[in-house]
Length: 301
Length: 198
Image 1 (cartoon, rainbow over the protein chains, first blue to last red):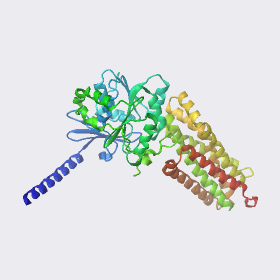
Image 2: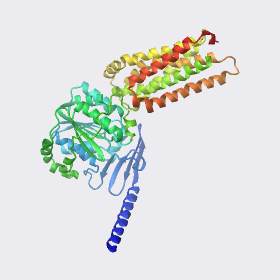
Image 3: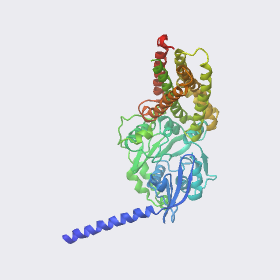
Image 4: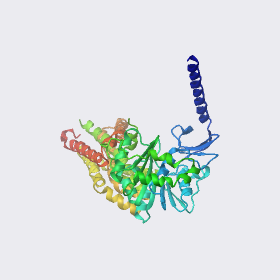
């Protein structure tokens, strides 16, 4: 009895040591590049196994993109895996728009997964484009067209043209700052108009606390029901048209078992996350171009 | 009473300008984005409008200056803001379709919507200095006090708008509130008995 307790004591002490060791391992990250852009500081840190893009010193407030140096295709962040869950709703998109580049993981992965798709990428910060190319293997080219522009300005300009997208990915929000004009009913209506019938929008959002409810009611005011994937991050998957049923999603997911393997995760892992249950305050105020204090709301408990 | 009204007009005008500038950024963002160019364009237009307003206000103070006329400058600035409320969205819609470049598009939009009200607001401070100053010895001190009140008003307008007003009200509601306060301050000062008009 005493022995068992002692062993448990040793075990937790060892666990504590292991935690300290892993903490100091993250502290041993080396700065390999830093620059000041028009918008922020851009840092690239590296440790023995990963290289990360951060907007704060020592990645104090989150990491934007990380790649595994020995397996560069592996999707280090769960949210990028969750974003690819959009393919269960639109399995063979021909045209894709990604708003927000980061290290370029999403467009790079989409180009590998979908050799026939045209991918447009919009990024506001030229310095981020530079770093994505130099340190994260992002290569725009014929199939990946990059535009340096504000995401909403791009969407409005695109609406005046005839091009429409089967899949739009919104990855422009981050821990510290949400571009408020890209989280309003009007913006989402524009995004919806830019989708082909049955097209899908996937949004990686950082909403927490009070904003979670405002964001949810804003999405449902434009798209009706949507899939809400949560695990640390939140990914919203919504459709321009009826939302595919969970049976359709499950069936489509089987087609990606082999395709997702090189990226280091199982398609089936995402399925339990798909939920349409509203777990927010449905009386929350809808965000509009006239009322969009997203950053203030995000800081409120 | 006379001085209180002068300082009130100067302080409120400072508040008004910065609140409008912040809301300007929110109004332009859906059409031109919130890239650094858009803020650059807005700030440029406000600074240029204020600088010309100072010049104009100084000239205007040469001809029979009075508290009543100062009050009418404040009211004129409010009236010049009405087009933002009435036609702002339509104008931004057209401009953004017409001028694709976000730099010149936002510069044109900010100039058309905000130049006139900001320029008129700029007239307030030098005009008020003329009304305050009785002799040369106190001129610098009074001008200092006036700039203090006006710029402190600007600070308050920036803080209250960005921290609180946008959290509770819509952009157009805040604009209407600002216009209502301008009307209240302007009419109060305009109706003040002529006796106080030194």
